[in-house]
Length: 302
Image (tube, rainbow, N blue to C red):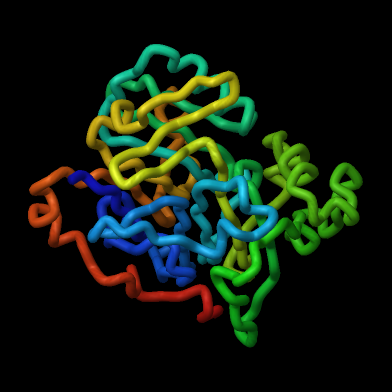
């Protein structure tokens, strides 16, 4: 019987299998990022076929959520908030289904800052600035004496942008302090590229974020997309055996200027893939226990 599995690592080509719904953060690192990731999927089955439940989905403000990709970490070099992206990349063209325009319209409704070329005949992609696309986003300032907060937290996170490092040193009037805890205010303000360029992330900026939605329904054998209006799609047909890579990456301005994908250096990746009968042994070399992926942690702040 086919099954889904989750992988994580510092790039799309350096991934190890992790477990969903464990309540544990998995360490990932690259030469430009240190942090942890955690994944929650409602209805997710383990290799034996048993569904693993999580208290995450029982919390009042997560009861309607069906999946969540979370991370906590810091960038080891300075990056403009406009140049840190999050989204999906594929290594082969997608078989575009009937009704695909409805999917794109829904994606842009959910995230107006989304840029995409999912119909690319080489490497399809859909990426957004991280600061505007994350469902929930928290920023804190750290130094060498600080220990990173619990991750993932036992209580579902909200928003906090009160300590964002604006280049001017002062918070813009268009994003008042009393709006620091609202995702709506953050996403509306950072919808504009010029506003995103007011913020630079560096080694002393600890970011914790939760990318969580309810439009994907997971089962032991597949994933269904359901969007308002009654439209549904078997995502297995769209993905066509390809792993679905959720990447956090730098913007590649040169490629973008040449009408190419903006995908630059990858900071970390979480992938979902389908294993068919007989594939388990063939991919065994990519499997590990849910321990460390990479060698550093956000707990260790330089």
